[in-house]
Amino acid sequence: VSTQSTGDYQFLVHHGLLLTRDSLSYWFSIPNSGFFFSCVNKGKNELIRMLERQKTRLPEMLQEDIEKKKLSYLGAKFHIRHLLGLHLLEKEITPSGKILIRLSSIARQQ
Image (tube, rainbow, N blue to C red; front, side, top):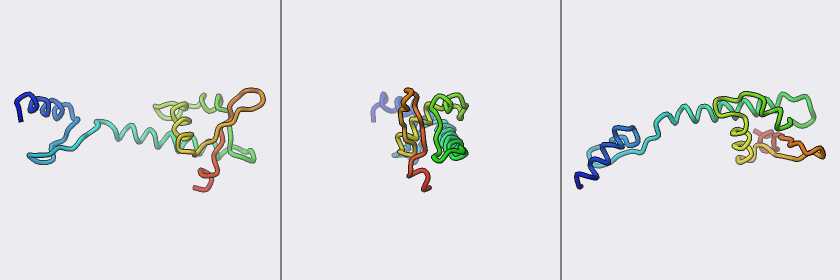
């Protein structure tokens, strides 16, 4: 191991990106990732509960109404996109051109 690469390791360890496992190996680390993942879960659960509380036949809301709500630090747009990617939400364009967000059948079964 050259002195340059040793310095690189020390830099990464100092900044919390590598954790020393033993004298020959390291673990990768992402500082403060726990806070990020707790925000993701909190916002996901809030959005699903918000849709489930709707008094309509299907749990649905206009996207613009959802985006007015404050969902964790990441914002409503992030959580809508995250849940669309997980197929827990479905998106439909209404005849008036507005976007309707509803819980998918997968989310209603959980």
